[in-house]
Length: 289
Ligand SMILES: [Fe+2]
Image (cartoon, rainbow, N blue to C red; front, side):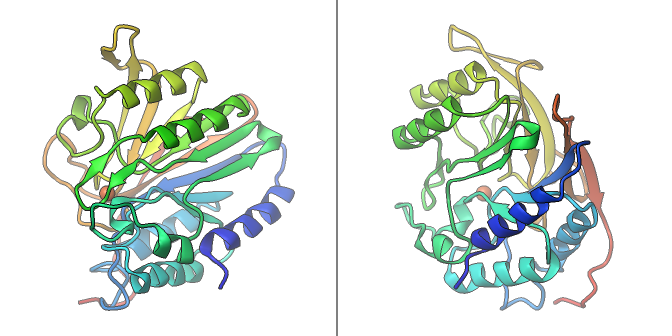
């Protein structure tokens, strides 16, 4: 069976061939955590359907889902996610980062179900006309033990991709760094050797955005790693957290946006804009229990 990724690559090619000279938009959303088809709707009350429909209405060149598509990475749930996406995003490519809930909750990484349904774990979106590239990486080390960060293999992969990347590069991955307002939200530690290598790499290569999910909220932080290993916030790489696409919202301070949401970006030859936050409210079309 064709994976969601294979379908998305085909659709992307078609859509890129129709691109004008002015630029394009794309959407980043994450964390839907569906448990269909056992629930009536994909998420408890159909919120993912609403968010995805809003994303489709924006007619983006592509949509990126930052991971945690489902509650646990059993094949039947992942298959249902793919079905829902194909139904709502008929002509729009949807690319997916792997999240901790997309795997079974065991200590070892287990990606067979993800690969069989959604498809590739590591992928690239290239839009040559606008000198643009998205690189997706996997920063789930142990889904069962909630350990996030970067293996040496992952860093080597990222290094190879960045070496050949064009000027406008963005990165997509699931878990966020434990820093600033996100210090206690269960992401990856920033004080490990591997994390330092990660920050050095994205800074050296001038990565323009890092898109993360995992926290069911919306936020943005600029993060700069100094040479002595300390960090300065409010300058540096633009980290955009968008993880409010259907999973129960995280409403504890400091992240208190009380709506499901998605982030939209516009790209032209010179720049990638700041994220445009869309708050999504409404009633699902179907009554869900
Ligand atoms: Fe997560």
